[in-house]
Image (cartoon, rainbow, N blue to C red; front, side, top):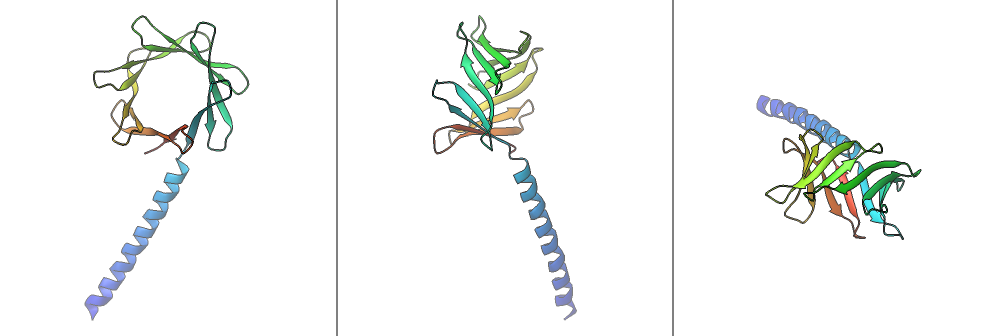
Length: 157
């Protein structure tokens, strides 16, 4: 009889811990889910929107064919051009190099800062989505297509 009382008490404690940990996991997961949706506007420019539909930035081409990211007010955030090796060079609004993006031997896109340190890599997973990993190989986020064909970036897992 005493065995069943101890078992019942331990079961209650385990269930309380399980429910608490499940609640914490769900709340942290829903809190850290930042979504950015990339779509095209009527002019063919790429538009980045947050999870509420607010425009974060627009990507268009300048007269030289370089990509220019602008905020919702028209201020330049970043310019993207190609160097002599075909790598994408990202510069800030003042022309300072922020990062370079190239492809490694495995076909992954590798983003490096101006000093050559890896910021992140983007590779394709088994289901056709793109996975963004930091310099240590930890997953930072994922790019998936939604039902409209827009790319959705989700941070976190």
